[in-house]
Length: 155
Length: 415
Image (cartoon, rainbow over all chains, first blue to last red; front, side, top):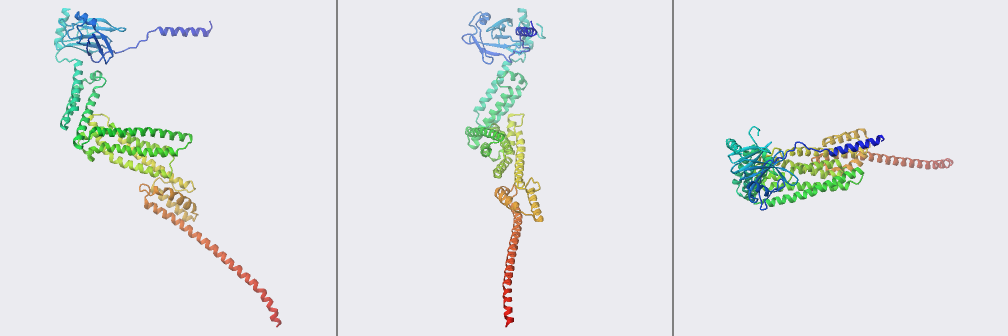
Protein backbone atom coordinates (compact mmCIF):
# COMPACT_ATOMS: atom_id res chain seq x y z
CA UNK A 1 0.00 0.00 0.00
CA UNK A 2 1.45 3.38 -0.95
CA UNK A 3 1.63 6.45 1.33
CA UNK A 4 -1.61 7.99 -0.06
CA UNK A 5 -3.50 4.77 0.55
CA UNK A 6 -2.34 4.60 4.18
CA UNK A 7 -3.36 8.19 4.81
CA UNK A 8 -6.83 7.62 3.39
CA UNK A 9 -7.39 4.52 5.52
CA UNK A 10 -6.13 6.40 8.60
CA UNK A 11 -8.53 9.27 7.96
CA UNK A 12 -11.45 6.91 7.45
CA UNK A 13 -10.67 5.13 10.74
CA UNK A 14 -10.43 8.45 12.60
CA UNK A 15 -13.83 9.54 11.24
CA UNK A 16 -15.33 6.20 12.24
CA UNK A 17 -13.98 6.57 15.76
CA UNK A 18 -15.27 10.12 16.07
CA UNK A 19 -18.74 9.11 14.88
CA UNK A 20 -18.83 6.32 17.46
CA UNK A 21 -17.96 8.65 20.36
CA UNK A 22 -20.97 10.05 22.32
CA UNK A 23 -21.16 13.80 22.18
CA UNK A 24 -21.98 15.12 25.64
CA UNK A 25 -23.00 18.62 26.70
CA UNK A 26 -22.11 19.34 30.32
CA UNK A 27 -23.55 21.51 33.08
CA UNK A 28 -27.13 21.47 31.80
CA UNK A 29 -29.73 22.78 34.24
CA UNK A 30 -33.18 21.41 33.62
CA UNK A 31 -34.80 23.04 36.66
CA UNK A 32 -38.01 25.00 36.36
CA UNK A 33 -38.00 28.17 38.46
CA UNK A 34 -41.44 27.46 39.88
CA UNK A 35 -43.75 24.47 40.06
CA UNK A 36 -46.69 24.20 37.73
CA UNK A 37 -50.09 23.67 39.26
CA UNK A 38 -52.13 21.79 36.69
CA UNK A 39 -55.71 20.59 36.66
CA UNK A 40 -56.26 17.03 35.51
CA UNK A 41 -58.79 16.98 32.69
CA UNK A 42 -61.61 14.41 32.27
CA UNK A 43 -59.28 12.27 30.16
CA UNK A 44 -56.81 12.12 33.07
CA UNK A 45 -54.37 14.34 31.20
CA UNK A 46 -52.41 17.36 32.29
CA UNK A 47 -50.96 19.99 29.97
CA UNK A 48 -48.27 22.51 30.83
CA UNK A 49 -48.34 25.26 28.22
CA UNK A 50 -45.22 27.03 29.37
CA UNK A 51 -43.04 23.94 29.03
CA UNK A 52 -45.13 22.34 26.27
CA UNK A 53 -45.62 19.14 28.18
CA UNK A 54 -48.58 16.75 28.16
CA UNK A 55 -48.92 13.59 30.31
CA UNK A 56 -51.53 10.99 31.12
CA UNK A 57 -51.90 10.47 34.89
CA UNK A 58 -54.19 7.42 34.83
CA UNK A 59 -51.53 5.06 36.17
CA UNK A 60 -50.39 7.57 38.80
CA UNK A 61 -53.96 7.89 40.12
CA UNK A 62 -54.28 4.11 40.25
CA UNK A 63 -50.97 3.80 42.09
CA UNK A 64 -51.60 6.53 44.68
CA UNK A 65 -55.35 6.24 45.21
CA UNK A 66 -56.07 2.79 43.79
CA UNK A 67 -58.59 4.51 41.58
CA UNK A 68 -57.61 5.51 38.06
CA UNK A 69 -60.22 8.30 38.00
CA UNK A 70 -59.34 9.79 41.39
CA UNK A 71 -57.39 12.71 39.94
CA UNK A 72 -59.97 13.94 37.43
CA UNK A 73 -60.67 17.61 38.01
CA UNK A 74 -58.06 17.75 40.79
CA UNK A 75 -54.91 19.82 40.85
CA UNK A 76 -51.47 18.26 40.78
CA UNK A 77 -48.17 19.98 41.27
CA UNK A 78 -45.34 19.33 38.89
CA UNK A 79 -41.76 20.53 39.18
CA UNK A 80 -38.68 19.57 37.22
CA UNK A 81 -35.52 19.50 39.29
CA UNK A 82 -32.18 20.85 38.18
CA UNK A 83 -30.94 17.34 37.39
CA UNK A 84 -33.92 16.72 35.11
CA UNK A 85 -36.32 14.61 37.21
CA UNK A 86 -40.03 15.38 37.34
CA UNK A 87 -41.54 15.62 40.86
CA UNK A 88 -45.29 15.17 41.07
CA UNK A 89 -47.56 15.40 44.10
CA UNK A 90 -50.82 16.95 45.14
CA UNK A 91 -53.49 17.36 47.79
CA UNK A 92 -54.24 13.99 49.47
CA UNK A 93 -51.02 12.41 48.17
CA UNK A 94 -48.99 10.38 50.66
CA UNK A 95 -46.01 10.34 48.31
CA UNK A 96 -44.02 12.52 46.06
CA UNK A 97 -43.44 10.70 42.78
CA UNK A 98 -40.17 11.21 40.95
CA UNK A 99 -39.97 10.39 37.26
CA UNK A 100 -37.13 10.28 34.81
CA UNK A 101 -37.87 11.30 31.23
CA UNK A 102 -37.87 8.49 28.69
CA UNK A 103 -38.81 8.22 25.04
CA UNK A 104 -42.41 9.43 25.02
CA UNK A 105 -42.87 8.47 28.66
CA UNK A 106 -41.97 9.27 32.25
CA UNK A 107 -40.38 6.38 34.09
CA UNK A 108 -40.83 6.11 37.86
CA UNK A 109 -37.54 6.71 39.62
CA UNK A 110 -38.85 6.78 43.19
CA UNK A 111 -42.01 7.19 45.14
CA UNK A 112 -41.04 9.05 48.29
CA UNK A 113 -43.37 8.71 51.30
CA UNK A 114 -43.99 12.11 52.88
CA UNK A 115 -47.31 11.98 54.76
CA UNK A 116 -49.30 9.25 56.48
CA UNK A 117 -52.64 11.02 56.19
CA UNK A 118 -51.96 12.63 52.85
CA UNK A 119 -50.72 16.12 52.13
CA UNK A 120 -53.20 18.86 53.00
CA UNK A 121 -51.81 21.84 51.20
CA UNK A 122 -48.59 20.84 49.43
CA UNK A 123 -46.18 23.01 47.45
CA UNK A 124 -42.77 22.38 45.94
CA UNK A 125 -39.97 24.87 45.61
CA UNK A 126 -36.84 24.64 43.52
CA UNK A 127 -33.88 24.68 45.94
CA UNK A 128 -30.95 23.34 43.92
CA UNK A 129 -29.66 20.72 44.20
CA UNK A 130 -32.89 19.64 45.96
CA UNK A 131 -36.60 20.13 45.71
CA UNK A 132 -38.27 21.53 48.81
CA UNK A 133 -41.63 20.17 49.84
CA UNK A 134 -43.95 22.21 52.04
CA UNK A 135 -47.30 21.27 53.49
CA UNK A 136 -48.93 24.35 54.93
CA UNK A 137 -47.19 25.20 58.16
CA UNK A 138 -46.59 21.61 59.20
CA UNK A 139 -44.00 20.21 56.89
CA UNK A 140 -40.84 21.44 55.24
CA UNK A 141 -38.32 18.97 53.85
CA UNK A 142 -35.86 18.66 51.06
CA UNK A 143 -36.01 15.89 48.53
CA UNK A 144 -33.46 14.39 46.19
CA UNK A 145 -34.61 12.32 43.24
CA UNK A 146 -34.56 9.20 45.40
CA UNK A 147 -35.51 10.13 48.95
CA UNK A 148 -35.99 12.69 51.68
CA UNK A 149 -32.83 14.56 52.50
CA UNK A 150 -32.29 15.59 56.09
CA UNK A 151 -31.32 19.14 56.87
CA UNK A 152 -27.58 19.43 56.49
CA UNK A 153 -27.62 17.51 53.27
CA UNK A 154 -27.49 13.91 54.55
CA UNK A 155 -30.07 11.38 53.56
CA UNK B 1 -41.89 4.39 57.19
CA UNK B 2 -43.74 5.55 60.31
CA UNK B 3 -40.44 6.56 61.92
CA UNK B 4 -39.45 8.59 58.87
CA UNK B 5 -42.81 10.30 58.73
CA UNK B 6 -42.68 11.13 62.45
CA UNK B 7 -39.25 12.63 61.97
CA UNK B 8 -40.46 14.62 59.00
CA UNK B 9 -43.36 16.08 60.93
CA UNK B 10 -41.09 17.13 63.82
CA UNK B 11 -38.52 18.68 61.47
CA UNK B 12 -41.24 20.30 59.41
CA UNK B 13 -43.11 21.78 62.33
CA UNK B 14 -40.00 23.35 63.75
CA UNK B 15 -39.17 25.18 60.55
CA UNK B 16 -42.54 25.83 59.05
CA UNK B 17 -43.25 29.28 60.48
CA UNK B 18 -43.46 31.88 57.77
CA UNK B 19 -42.70 29.46 54.96
CA UNK B 20 -44.07 30.34 51.58
CA UNK B 21 -44.35 28.41 48.42
CA UNK B 22 -42.63 29.98 45.41
CA UNK B 23 -45.77 29.29 43.46
CA UNK B 24 -47.88 31.25 45.96
CA UNK B 25 -45.40 34.10 45.89
CA UNK B 26 -45.59 34.26 42.11
CA UNK B 27 -49.37 33.96 42.17
CA UNK B 28 -49.66 36.73 44.73
CA UNK B 29 -47.48 39.05 42.70
CA UNK B 30 -49.37 38.28 39.51
CA UNK B 31 -52.73 38.70 41.21
CA UNK B 32 -51.83 42.07 42.70
CA UNK B 33 -50.46 43.26 39.38
CA UNK B 34 -53.65 42.14 37.66
CA UNK B 35 -55.82 43.88 40.28
CA UNK B 36 -53.89 47.08 39.69
CA UNK B 37 -54.33 46.78 35.94
CA UNK B 38 -58.07 46.35 36.38
CA UNK B 39 -58.21 49.34 38.71
CA UNK B 40 -56.25 51.44 36.21
CA UNK B 41 -58.64 50.45 33.44
CA UNK B 42 -61.76 51.29 35.38
CA UNK B 43 -60.82 54.30 37.56
CA UNK B 44 -61.96 57.57 36.07
CA UNK B 45 -60.96 60.29 38.52
CA UNK B 46 -57.55 61.91 38.55
CA UNK B 47 -57.18 61.67 42.35
CA UNK B 48 -57.90 57.92 42.37
CA UNK B 49 -55.49 57.34 39.51
CA UNK B 50 -52.90 59.33 41.38
CA UNK B 51 -53.31 57.11 44.46
CA UNK B 52 -52.84 53.96 42.37
CA UNK B 53 -49.34 55.15 41.69
CA UNK B 54 -48.49 54.65 45.36
CA UNK B 55 -49.83 51.10 45.15
CA UNK B 56 -47.56 50.32 42.21
CA UNK B 57 -44.63 51.70 44.22
CA UNK B 58 -45.65 49.51 47.17
CA UNK B 59 -45.89 46.40 44.98
CA UNK B 60 -42.43 47.03 43.62
CA UNK B 61 -41.02 47.64 47.09
CA UNK B 62 -42.60 44.55 48.65
CA UNK B 63 -41.47 42.14 45.98
CA UNK B 64 -38.07 43.68 45.20
CA UNK B 65 -36.41 41.09 47.46
CA UNK B 66 -37.72 38.30 45.20
CA UNK B 67 -36.70 39.98 41.97
CA UNK B 68 -34.29 37.20 40.97
CA UNK B 69 -36.91 34.50 41.46
CA UNK B 70 -39.70 36.47 39.79
CA UNK B 71 -37.51 37.27 36.80
CA UNK B 72 -37.28 33.52 36.18
CA UNK B 73 -40.75 32.53 37.27
CA UNK B 74 -42.81 35.22 35.52
CA UNK B 75 -43.15 34.34 31.93
CA UNK B 76 -42.70 35.92 29.44
CA UNK B 77 -42.20 39.19 31.40
CA UNK B 78 -39.60 39.86 34.07
CA UNK B 79 -40.28 41.54 37.39
CA UNK B 80 -39.12 44.95 36.18
CA UNK B 81 -40.98 44.60 32.89
CA UNK B 82 -44.17 43.90 34.81
CA UNK B 83 -43.68 46.93 37.04
CA UNK B 84 -42.78 49.13 34.07
CA UNK B 85 -45.84 47.96 32.19
CA UNK B 86 -47.97 48.88 35.23
CA UNK B 87 -46.40 52.33 35.34
CA UNK B 88 -47.08 52.77 31.64
CA UNK B 89 -50.70 51.74 32.14
CA UNK B 90 -50.92 54.20 35.00
CA UNK B 91 -49.57 57.01 32.84
CA UNK B 92 -51.90 56.12 30.01
CA UNK B 93 -54.88 55.96 32.35
CA UNK B 94 -53.97 59.36 33.78
CA UNK B 95 -53.46 60.77 30.29
CA UNK B 96 -56.80 59.48 29.09
CA UNK B 97 -58.68 61.01 32.01
CA UNK B 98 -56.64 64.23 32.04
CA UNK B 99 -57.14 64.95 28.34
CA UNK B 100 -60.85 64.29 28.33
CA UNK B 101 -61.45 66.27 31.53
CA UNK B 102 -59.22 69.28 30.85
CA UNK B 103 -59.18 69.54 27.05
CA UNK B 104 -62.14 67.47 25.92
CA UNK B 105 -59.82 65.40 23.74
CA UNK B 106 -60.17 61.67 23.44
CA UNK B 107 -56.79 60.02 23.73
CA UNK B 108 -57.73 57.54 21.00
CA UNK B 109 -58.21 60.43 18.53
CA UNK B 110 -54.89 61.92 19.48
CA UNK B 111 -53.12 58.60 19.21
CA UNK B 112 -54.73 57.96 15.85
CA UNK B 113 -53.47 61.30 14.60
CA UNK B 114 -49.96 60.63 15.90
CA UNK B 115 -50.02 57.16 14.45
CA UNK B 116 -51.12 58.41 11.00
CA UNK B 117 -48.36 61.05 10.96
CA UNK B 118 -45.80 58.48 12.13
CA UNK B 119 -46.82 56.11 9.36
CA UNK B 120 -46.41 58.86 6.75
CA UNK B 121 -43.01 59.67 8.19
CA UNK B 122 -41.93 56.05 7.98
CA UNK B 123 -42.89 55.97 4.30
CA UNK B 124 -40.89 59.13 3.71
CA UNK B 125 -37.92 57.71 5.59
CA UNK B 126 -37.89 54.69 3.28
CA UNK B 127 -38.00 57.00 0.24
CA UNK B 128 -35.20 59.10 1.72
CA UNK B 129 -33.00 56.03 2.14
CA UNK B 130 -33.69 55.04 -1.45
CA UNK B 131 -32.78 58.50 -2.79
CA UNK B 132 -29.61 58.65 -0.72
CA UNK B 133 -28.59 55.29 -2.13
CA UNK B 134 -29.37 56.49 -5.65
CA UNK B 135 -27.32 59.64 -5.08
CA UNK B 136 -24.32 57.69 -3.81
CA UNK B 137 -24.48 55.29 -6.74
CA UNK B 138 -24.75 58.15 -9.23
CA UNK B 139 -21.74 59.88 -7.65
CA UNK B 140 -19.70 56.69 -7.76
CA UNK B 141 -20.52 55.95 -11.39
CA UNK B 142 -20.38 59.57 -12.54
CA UNK B 143 -24.10 59.58 -13.33
CA UNK B 144 -26.63 62.40 -13.12
CA UNK B 145 -27.02 63.65 -9.55
CA UNK B 146 -28.80 66.96 -9.93
CA UNK B 147 -32.36 65.67 -10.19
CA UNK B 148 -31.85 63.19 -7.35
CA UNK B 149 -30.40 65.93 -5.14
CA UNK B 150 -33.36 68.15 -5.90
CA UNK B 151 -35.87 65.41 -5.04
CA UNK B 152 -33.97 64.47 -1.91
CA UNK B 153 -33.83 68.07 -0.77
CA UNK B 154 -37.59 68.50 -1.29
CA UNK B 155 -38.31 65.26 0.51
CA UNK B 156 -36.19 66.24 3.51
CA UNK B 157 -37.92 69.60 3.65
CA UNK B 158 -41.34 67.90 3.66
CA UNK B 159 -40.16 65.41 6.26
CA UNK B 160 -38.98 68.21 8.52
CA UNK B 161 -42.33 69.96 8.23
CA UNK B 162 -44.17 66.74 9.03
CA UNK B 163 -42.04 65.95 12.08
CA UNK B 164 -42.59 69.43 13.45
CA UNK B 165 -46.33 68.97 12.85
CA UNK B 166 -46.14 65.72 14.78
CA UNK B 167 -44.35 67.46 17.66
CA UNK B 168 -47.08 70.10 17.69
CA UNK B 169 -49.84 67.51 17.66
CA UNK B 170 -48.34 65.88 20.75
CA UNK B 171 -47.69 69.05 22.72
CA UNK B 172 -50.76 71.10 21.74
CA UNK B 173 -53.32 69.20 23.86
CA UNK B 174 -51.27 69.87 26.99
CA UNK B 175 -51.11 73.62 26.38
CA UNK B 176 -48.17 75.99 25.90
CA UNK B 177 -46.99 75.68 29.47
CA UNK B 178 -46.39 71.94 29.36
CA UNK B 179 -42.71 72.48 30.19
CA UNK B 180 -43.70 73.80 33.61
CA UNK B 181 -46.88 71.76 34.18
CA UNK B 182 -47.34 69.19 36.99
CA UNK B 183 -45.32 66.00 36.77
CA UNK B 184 -47.99 63.61 35.49
CA UNK B 185 -49.18 65.66 32.48
CA UNK B 186 -45.54 66.26 31.62
CA UNK B 187 -44.80 62.56 31.97
CA UNK B 188 -47.81 61.68 29.79
CA UNK B 189 -46.65 64.05 27.05
CA UNK B 190 -43.11 62.74 27.43
CA UNK B 191 -44.25 59.17 27.05
CA UNK B 192 -46.08 59.99 23.83
CA UNK B 193 -43.03 61.83 22.62
CA UNK B 194 -40.90 58.76 23.29
CA UNK B 195 -43.38 56.34 21.77
CA UNK B 196 -43.41 58.35 18.54
CA UNK B 197 -39.60 58.18 18.66
CA UNK B 198 -39.51 61.90 18.03
CA UNK B 199 -36.13 62.72 19.48
CA UNK B 200 -34.56 60.18 17.17
CA UNK B 201 -36.56 61.57 14.26
CA UNK B 202 -35.40 65.11 15.05
CA UNK B 203 -31.85 63.83 15.31
CA UNK B 204 -32.26 62.14 11.92
CA UNK B 205 -33.33 65.41 10.28
CA UNK B 206 -30.11 67.11 11.33
CA UNK B 207 -28.02 64.04 10.46
CA UNK B 208 -29.66 63.63 7.03
CA UNK B 209 -29.10 67.26 6.17
CA UNK B 210 -25.45 66.96 7.12
CA UNK B 211 -25.08 63.89 4.97
CA UNK B 212 -26.86 65.64 2.12
CA UNK B 213 -24.37 68.51 2.30
CA UNK B 214 -21.52 66.04 2.16
CA UNK B 215 -22.93 64.01 -0.73
CA UNK B 216 -24.07 66.85 -2.99
CA UNK B 217 -22.29 69.31 -5.26
CA UNK B 218 -24.20 72.42 -4.42
CA UNK B 219 -25.08 75.20 -6.88
CA UNK B 220 -25.55 78.82 -5.74
CA UNK B 221 -29.32 78.45 -6.09
CA UNK B 222 -29.27 75.52 -3.63
CA UNK B 223 -27.99 77.58 -0.74
CA UNK B 224 -31.12 79.71 -0.28
CA UNK B 225 -33.50 76.83 0.54
CA UNK B 226 -30.82 75.04 2.54
CA UNK B 227 -30.18 78.11 4.69
CA UNK B 228 -33.91 78.53 5.21
CA UNK B 229 -34.27 74.90 6.25
CA UNK B 230 -31.36 75.02 8.66
CA UNK B 231 -32.53 78.30 10.24
CA UNK B 232 -36.08 77.06 10.56
CA UNK B 233 -35.00 73.82 12.22
CA UNK B 234 -32.55 75.54 14.56
CA UNK B 235 -35.23 78.03 15.59
CA UNK B 236 -37.83 75.34 16.29
CA UNK B 237 -35.30 73.16 18.06
CA UNK B 238 -34.23 75.99 20.37
CA UNK B 239 -37.89 76.41 21.37
CA UNK B 240 -38.49 72.69 21.78
CA UNK B 241 -35.36 71.65 23.57
CA UNK B 242 -36.29 72.69 27.11
CA UNK B 243 -39.83 71.42 26.66
CA UNK B 244 -38.56 68.04 25.47
CA UNK B 245 -36.16 67.78 28.38
CA UNK B 246 -38.89 68.69 30.88
CA UNK B 247 -41.41 66.14 29.58
CA UNK B 248 -38.84 63.38 29.09
CA UNK B 249 -37.45 63.94 32.57
CA UNK B 250 -40.94 63.58 34.05
CA UNK B 251 -41.58 60.46 31.99
CA UNK B 252 -38.30 58.97 33.18
CA UNK B 253 -39.24 59.64 36.81
CA UNK B 254 -42.75 58.26 36.39
CA UNK B 255 -41.54 55.08 34.71
CA UNK B 256 -38.42 54.90 36.90
CA UNK B 257 -36.22 54.45 33.85
CA UNK B 258 -32.52 54.46 34.49
CA UNK B 259 -31.37 55.70 31.08
CA UNK B 260 -32.27 59.35 30.55
CA UNK B 261 -34.33 59.34 27.38
CA UNK B 262 -33.43 62.93 26.56
CA UNK B 263 -29.69 62.22 26.32
CA UNK B 264 -30.06 62.35 22.54
CA UNK B 265 -31.06 66.01 22.85
CA UNK B 266 -27.41 66.85 23.50
CA UNK B 267 -26.50 65.05 20.28
CA UNK B 268 -29.15 67.04 18.39
CA UNK B 269 -27.66 70.26 19.82
CA UNK B 270 -24.29 69.27 18.54
CA UNK B 271 -25.58 68.23 15.11
CA UNK B 272 -27.48 71.48 14.65
CA UNK B 273 -24.24 73.39 15.27
CA UNK B 274 -22.24 71.21 12.88
CA UNK B 275 -25.00 71.46 10.27
CA UNK B 276 -24.81 75.26 10.44
CA UNK B 277 -21.02 75.29 10.33
CA UNK B 278 -20.84 72.89 7.39
CA UNK B 279 -23.41 74.82 5.42
CA UNK B 280 -21.55 78.10 6.03
CA UNK B 281 -18.23 76.53 5.12
CA UNK B 282 -19.63 75.18 1.84
CA UNK B 283 -21.29 78.50 1.03
CA UNK B 284 -18.14 80.58 1.45
CA UNK B 285 -15.97 78.01 -0.32
CA UNK B 286 -18.40 77.93 -3.24
CA UNK B 287 -18.44 81.74 -3.38
CA UNK B 288 -14.64 81.81 -3.30
CA UNK B 289 -14.53 79.49 -6.33
CA UNK B 290 -16.54 82.04 -8.35
CA UNK B 291 -13.51 84.33 -8.11
CA UNK B 292 -10.66 81.85 -8.25
CA UNK B 293 -12.07 80.08 -11.36
CA UNK B 294 -11.66 83.39 -13.22
CA UNK B 295 -8.15 83.99 -11.99
CA UNK B 296 -9.06 86.44 -9.26
CA UNK B 297 -7.22 85.62 -6.09
CA UNK B 298 -8.91 86.98 -3.01
CA UNK B 299 -7.56 86.65 0.50
CA UNK B 300 -9.10 83.46 1.96
CA UNK B 301 -12.40 84.01 3.79
CA UNK B 302 -14.75 81.78 5.78
CA UNK B 303 -17.51 84.14 6.87
CA UNK B 304 -19.29 87.36 5.99
CA UNK B 305 -16.86 89.82 7.59
CA UNK B 306 -13.94 87.90 6.08
CA UNK B 307 -15.48 88.10 2.62
CA UNK B 308 -16.14 91.87 2.96
CA UNK B 309 -12.60 92.50 4.09
CA UNK B 310 -11.13 90.36 1.35
CA UNK B 311 -13.21 91.99 -1.37
CA UNK B 312 -12.45 95.52 -0.16
CA UNK B 313 -8.74 94.71 -0.09
CA UNK B 314 -8.90 93.43 -3.67
CA UNK B 315 -10.72 96.55 -4.89
CA UNK B 316 -8.09 98.75 -3.24
CA UNK B 317 -5.36 96.64 -4.81
CA UNK B 318 -6.90 97.04 -8.27
CA UNK B 319 -7.25 100.80 -7.80
CA UNK B 320 -3.70 101.22 -6.57
CA UNK B 321 -2.26 99.12 -9.35
CA UNK B 322 -4.43 100.86 -11.95
CA UNK B 323 -5.10 97.38 -13.36
CA UNK B 324 -7.92 96.57 -15.70
CA UNK B 325 -10.98 95.70 -13.53
CA UNK B 326 -13.14 94.45 -16.41
CA UNK B 327 -13.03 90.73 -15.57
CA UNK B 328 -13.58 91.38 -11.90
CA UNK B 329 -16.36 93.91 -12.36
CA UNK B 330 -18.19 92.60 -15.40
CA UNK B 331 -17.52 88.86 -15.55
CA UNK B 332 -17.48 88.07 -11.87
CA UNK B 333 -19.37 90.67 -9.91
CA UNK B 334 -22.08 91.63 -12.38
CA UNK B 335 -22.54 88.33 -14.21
CA UNK B 336 -22.09 85.89 -11.31
CA UNK B 337 -22.26 87.46 -7.88
CA UNK B 338 -24.97 89.99 -8.51
CA UNK B 339 -27.05 87.60 -10.58
CA UNK B 340 -26.60 84.28 -8.78
CA UNK B 341 -25.55 85.13 -5.26
CA UNK B 342 -27.28 88.38 -4.36
CA UNK B 343 -30.38 86.72 -2.86
CA UNK B 344 -28.24 84.56 -0.60
CA UNK B 345 -25.67 87.21 0.34
CA UNK B 346 -28.33 89.75 1.26
CA UNK B 347 -29.76 87.40 3.90
CA UNK B 348 -29.03 88.78 7.35
CA UNK B 349 -27.32 85.59 8.55
CA UNK B 350 -24.93 85.74 5.53
CA UNK B 351 -23.91 89.36 4.77
CA UNK B 352 -27.08 91.37 5.08
CA UNK B 353 -28.58 93.92 2.69
CA UNK B 354 -26.58 96.89 4.00
CA UNK B 355 -23.23 95.18 3.75
CA UNK B 356 -24.00 93.83 0.29
CA UNK B 357 -24.98 97.35 -0.86
CA UNK B 358 -21.71 98.72 0.54
CA UNK B 359 -19.66 96.12 -1.35
CA UNK B 360 -21.68 96.71 -4.52
CA UNK B 361 -21.00 100.43 -4.27
CA UNK B 362 -17.30 99.71 -3.77
CA UNK B 363 -17.20 97.64 -6.94
CA UNK B 364 -19.30 100.25 -8.76
CA UNK B 365 -16.65 102.90 -8.02
CA UNK B 366 -14.12 100.72 -9.77
CA UNK B 367 -16.49 100.41 -12.69
CA UNK B 368 -17.03 104.27 -12.89
CA UNK B 369 -13.32 104.90 -12.85
CA UNK B 370 -12.95 102.44 -15.63
CA UNK B 371 -15.70 104.15 -17.63
CA UNK B 372 -14.02 107.59 -17.05
CA UNK B 373 -10.71 106.30 -18.35
CA UNK B 374 -12.31 104.86 -21.48
CA UNK B 375 -14.15 108.09 -22.11
CA UNK B 376 -10.88 110.02 -21.79
CA UNK B 377 -9.21 107.67 -24.23
CA UNK B 378 -11.99 108.00 -26.77
CA UNK B 379 -11.90 111.75 -26.33
CA UNK B 380 -8.15 111.80 -26.86
CA UNK B 381 -8.39 109.68 -29.98
CA UNK B 382 -11.15 111.85 -31.41
CA UNK B 383 -9.18 114.99 -30.55
CA UNK B 384 -6.10 113.58 -32.25
CA UNK B 385 -8.12 112.61 -35.29
CA UNK B 386 -9.68 116.06 -35.46
CA UNK B 387 -6.25 117.69 -35.01
CA UNK B 388 -4.74 115.49 -37.66
CA UNK B 389 -7.61 116.27 -40.03
CA UNK B 390 -7.26 119.96 -39.39
CA UNK B 391 -3.50 119.79 -39.92
CA UNK B 392 -3.85 117.91 -43.20
CA UNK B 393 -6.56 120.27 -44.41
CA UNK B 394 -4.47 123.26 -43.59
CA UNK B 395 -1.45 121.81 -45.24
CA UNK B 396 -3.47 120.94 -48.29
CA UNK B 397 -4.78 124.50 -48.48
CA UNK B 398 -1.29 125.89 -48.17
CA UNK B 399 -0.09 123.59 -50.89
CA UNK B 400 -2.91 124.75 -53.11
CA UNK B 401 -2.37 128.49 -52.48
CA UNK B 402 1.43 128.49 -53.05
CA UNK B 403 1.35 127.81 -56.91
CA UNK B 404 -1.25 130.57 -57.28
CA UNK B 405 1.21 133.02 -55.78
CA UNK B 406 3.98 131.84 -58.09
CA UNK B 407 1.64 132.15 -61.03
CA UNK B 408 0.68 135.64 -60.07
CA UNK B 409 4.15 136.98 -59.39
CA UNK B 410 5.52 137.19 -63.02
CA UNK B 411 2.41 138.89 -64.28
CA UNK B 412 2.56 141.41 -61.53
CA UNK B 413 6.21 141.84 -62.14
CA UNK B 414 5.57 142.07 -65.90
CA UNK B 415 3.12 144.83 -65.38
